[in-house]
Length: 367
Image: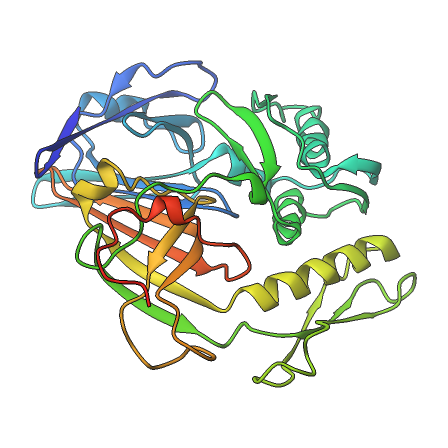
């Protein structure tokens, strides 16, 4: 077990491994070097660590057939991926183990036959994808359906043989949903609009060590979407405020070449417009580890209040001191000595009101 200490806060983390066919690990990782876990809202999570090739756990490290359990204050289950390295140098045998959560394994599965879902909740459509692939010979990954599993968004979808299941599931994030698979391989899903706020704000000099703002390139208030031209017609979606927006008209296009239903194309283009108008800026944030381990444990999908450092640059109109953001990625890295580094990416969500009851430790006057 790694015991990390930052200030007065203890943080416990254990790595253990075992066969992917098992329900629990069989061996704790005892000789790891640095460990990095990247949690991502859309594409799933990754884990990477270095172990000794002559350690007790090395006997259980079989490429593609081993699972890695993350236990303690963070819980997750990863499957070893196809890309890993072993090197021999100065009398040492080191193994660089890489794994992904079961959610990301869907990116290595394809539709075996055409599949159609009619007026079905998106959460159950994604579960239907898992049912489809797990029913194939050798395809069962042990994923089961839990609760909640409904997103509140009912859609009709048709998929062709050979389409990538993971790519199609990821495309639905633009509809404003989330779905995940936990350490027990249980799938849950829901609407991003229902996710809770993190209680403590992201405040430079308090919970945040450093932050960097980047914006502009992904904004659009008029978008075009197209799909399979033999059965669908391209769609324009334009924000109704485009004529009064001081930024003027900005356009982007996106395509879904395998989509064969006009309604699916309409849904995805509308979601693309919503995402393009809301994604005003993103912030790259270095968290204060002790605060992240205690009261600011942001994770992908969470909403938080970001305290904007005082500046006259970038905003349209009067500068905003407080803004709602959605967390899209969190990277946690620690070494064998207990050093911890936490980085995050958050997206501005100006359409979501700031809950004033969550800004108690913001000391500067709001004018």
